[in-house]
Image (cartoon, rainbow, N blue to C red; front, side, top):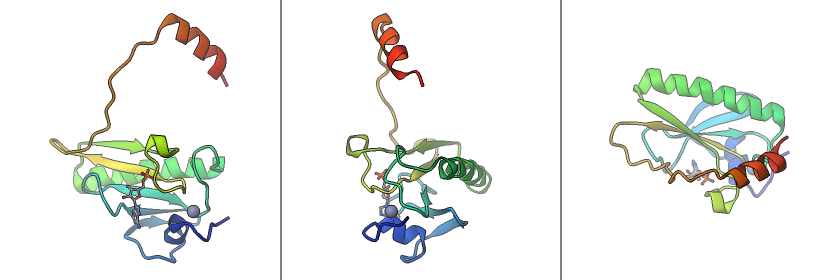
Length: 136
Ligand code: AMP
Ligand code: ZN
């Protein structure tokens, strides 16, 4: 399913041109227009899923396999020193385009990428409660 109002549907399906690194029947990999670092890429499914909660599981599997392949290419071709995989869900988490996408962010010594948080503490009470509530 596509969403006619969604810019990533249009990019993923080739209606809007993009700097494409890879394409197959399920996904398109493009360069991010406002990169966090050199080579920052996005994996877009061709069908519209707003976020991780909605994405089809087969598509999700294909996205991560594509990420692995693209990451290896980045390592070989750019000599990147590390890679962060980022995937935002919901405005509070930093999602700005509501069509599922995965960021592949190459890391270099001295880059300006900031993906950090202050480590907290897992209390015994929280641990017990969370294991109870979150076990699948
Ligand atoms: P997020 O904040 O996770 O929703 O990420 C959206 C990403 O899409 C940002 O990194 C934007 O720079 C990128 N972006 C938005 N519009 C375009 C576009 N037309 N082509 C390529 N990347 C885009
Ligand atoms: Zn879409």
